Structures are given as C-alpha cells and as structure tokens.
Image 1: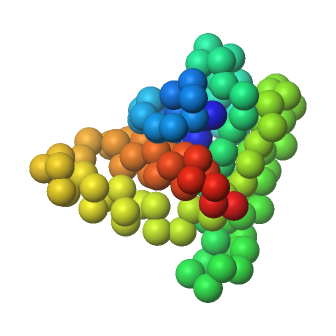
Image 2 (image 1 turned 90 degrees about the vertical axis):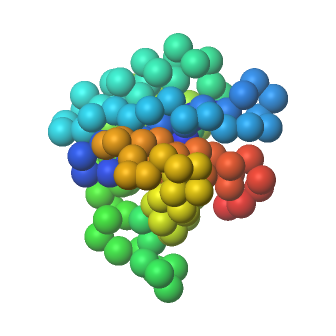
Amino acid sequence: MLALDYGRARIGVAVSDSLGITAQPLGFIPRSDDRQAAAVVAALAKKEGVGGIVIGLPLHAHGAAGENVAWVRAFLVELQAVCALPVHELDERYTTSEAEDRLRRRGEWPAPPGRVDAISAVILLERHLAGER
C-alpha cells in the first residue's frame, strides 16, 4: 500500500512492506498542480508495485467534513484518471501533531520541510494496516 498525506504545498508519501505489516516514509512530492502530482503518484505506485492507495481526509475535530475534504477529493479525481488502483480514504485527524511528537521523541526536531508530511503518511498507513476505516 501507498499512503498519501495530501497538503497544499507537499504530499507526504509512505509505503508498506510486501506483507502489509510495516510502513516506511518515502519522502514527499512537491505539489503545485494536481494533474502533475497525480502523475507522479501513479508512477511511484507503479514503481513500488503497490496494490492500493490510502489518502487522508482532513475532517474537523468533531468528525464532520469541511471544504478541505472536497479539495482532497478533487485531487482523487485527477489521480483516478491516471491510476486504476483502489483508493481508501481515512480520517487523518491529529496525524500532523502525532508526527511532530514522534520526531521530537527521536530528537529529529525541528524537522526539515517535508519530513512531517512523510511521517504523517506513515501514521495514516499504520492506521490503515491496523484495520482503521
């Protein structure tokens, strides 16, 4: 599986091992144009040989969808036009703060640009692999 933490400036990326047990950060994709970003994600998914993609949905703290969810889903339209893999949406609430906490505990804070995005994608993927929906 490939996981995406979709943001306005960057898309954090993580990949699972072939058994679907662990998640590793792959870095980030700079994002300025959704069509171009979707093509990069599709190429990366092909290169990694994944069977599906997980993308985080930025829900409000109380769980309701806001305007940012529509923005992520607009990217999914572009992605699905160039990639036939199944896409799973997953609540991404608190992944950024959890990623920052992990990096602080590891002594990797302040983190370089994109590192928090990649670790947020790892957290999304870990949640997916653990069966969260």
